[in-house]
Image (cartoon, rainbow, N blue to C red):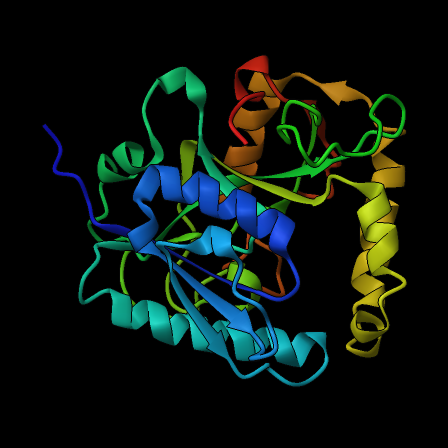
Length: 282
């Protein structure tokens, strides 16, 4: 019988209560709320009641444009994660709209799955990046009172979200948890990182009107999200099992020449329909 590993989860958030509530519910149910560490970017942020039982901290807002702020935030989170390794065997780091999911077909929980992995010599573990995108051909605006994956069936295979989500030792993350500054990727079979930043077009449109985000250089990033939604509407839907295997192999073997420790997808634009077994997970 495998020994259960001690696993913590960390995130940093600003003005993101909707996804934070889902993040707390999901990881809290799996890991225990006492093992969740939430840092609020700015002392002006309210700490929501639904975070009761979690470890919460208001920190001074990280200054600068989006690139500078991302670097400042990840340096802070990496330092806190390193401290947690005095008590934990693994530290899981994601944004509040990202959920690390074990294939429900296995019938085991995330901590059981992670406890069964061989971490000898590993710096981190990654799930295959699945960008959940609203398909404007057939999906309405998100009902925020209902389950997310029950309303969203399409995922775009994205190397951007094949992140070094699970640390096995105290090493610094790169901005946005996209890589570690030491060690390579290890993309684990049957493990996925579902990202919901493109799951609701009206929310993205609202963010594009936010003067604070615009002043910090978020316009380009939000325009990319809108472009992805338009692209997805015109892509054919591929076979899940076949392309999941292919994508994991491609991303394991190939790296961009400009960043050896980030995965590549060789320019392939692959849209999949998630299996029904995922519908009730988030």
